[in-house]
Amino acid sequence: MSHLFEAIDFVENPIYEQIISDLGSQQFSIIDGFLSLDEVELLRQALIDRHEEDTFKKAAIGNRVNETIEKSIRGDLILWMDETKATPSEMFFFNKINDLVAYLNRTCFMGILQKEFHYAIYPTNTFYKRHIDTFQNDDRRKLSFVCYLNEDGWLPENGGELVLYLNKNGQEVEKVIYPFPGRIVVFESQIIEHEVRPVKTERLSITGWLKTR
Image (tube, rainbow, N blue to C red; front, top):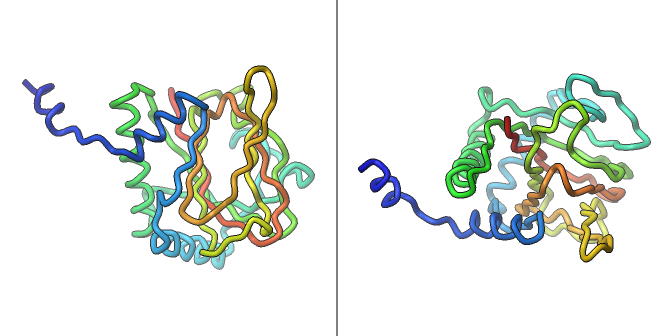
């Protein structure tokens, strides 16, 4: 009887279904308007407030147990987000992610048990060279997730494009994605290599991973 009530209560979410369809067909998904411009503004201000507290640090390569700072590979500044200490706007973001995770686990049996997210600031002229989001000693990352917090009116000439390197019919193809505000990109962490091209105007985002056991 409980399964019957669960089936009745389930409501299909078209955005989540688009993400699932995209991941199944091409291993990545781009969703515009995942956050409204008002929501982007609130989260951007939360990022700026955290940055003014001088809590950001230069990003490293490697996992959080064994990491080194290498400016020739990446130049962003990051601050790990703590859901237990989230501001109201940050909690709104986490609630959206938790809802997405619950949907993915329920409809696709992905087994996502953990998540980790950080704010990211790319100052002018910084970049992140081509890489993949898994480590030799930790392969729990299932889906990579980027949510852009740039100001409305972001232009392609501002740089900072995310480039996904895809394999299509045995040929490598570049998918160039511009960091427009409110846009999210979700892709397979263990499969897709990617980079952030040099930034001409400071680039703001939330980046994270949905992780299995």
